[in-house]
Amino acid sequence: MRIKSLLTIVPIVTGLLLLNCSNSDTPNASIDTNAIPDVYKKIYGATSITSDGTFITIKSNGQPDHKSVYYATTNAKYEAFSGTTFGNTTFKKNPNTINSSLAFVYKIPLHPVMASTHASTPLGAIGVAVNGVPFFNQYAGPNQPLTNEITSFDQYWGHPQATGIYHYHVEPTYLTQSKGKEALMGFLLDGFPVYGPEEKGLAVSGLDAYHGHVGVTADYPNGIYHYHVTNTDPYINGSGFYGTAGTVSN
Image (tube, rainbow, N blue to C red; front, side, top):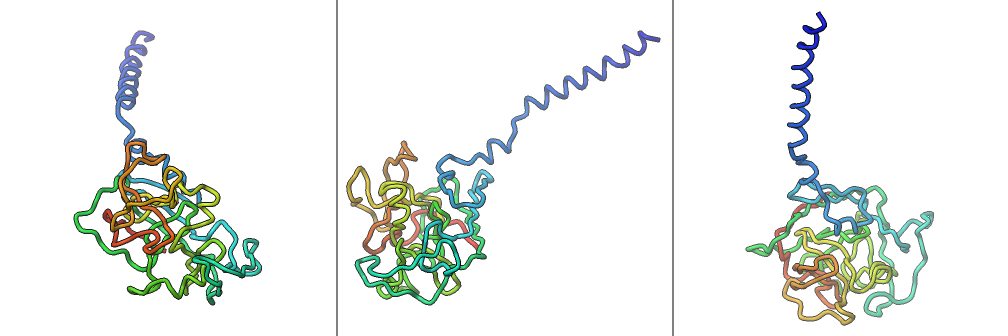
């Protein structure tokens, strides 16, 4: 009886061992596909960052992590502001306040490439800064320059629009002050990175029609196309996206 029992057990154990060996040899697709490159981990203002291997999905509430005159006076990040703002213009507060109930979802290419046709940037969010605040383009409205809006930029050169979306059209000075003038500022919807107004200690120059160029950065030692923020029009982005834009919703 004992010999018969052992003969019954051995095939079962052998089968389990073969099953375990088979599973260990199968690659875990989720580890390879869903890996998040370190550069995206610099988006410290995101509430979550995930990847499906083709797109990076970044979620953010869009609220600035710095003080602003546009926060409600009861908010701990409210700070009164007066004097001059961007372009040495006299600050004039607009009637809007920062909306605290927004939820942005950015879906951008994990491996961006140059587009065959460069689409124009839309009004609204065209990208996301590392602190989770949206980037807007160089227009106040359809083909309307920022001339009359610049006066409403707060102490860190951002402001909210009518529905309370706080955003940057120009250099986000809180980030260039805290991270450095050459640091990563964020990403546009086409997946290409945005950097500050300097390279190698000098003001950036030689940008193309889309307000960027190809070159080595601290995050991309092999080089990549990237945008730069500057203090002259078009500020962040020029004649459209260099790559093919993903999507954004809020």
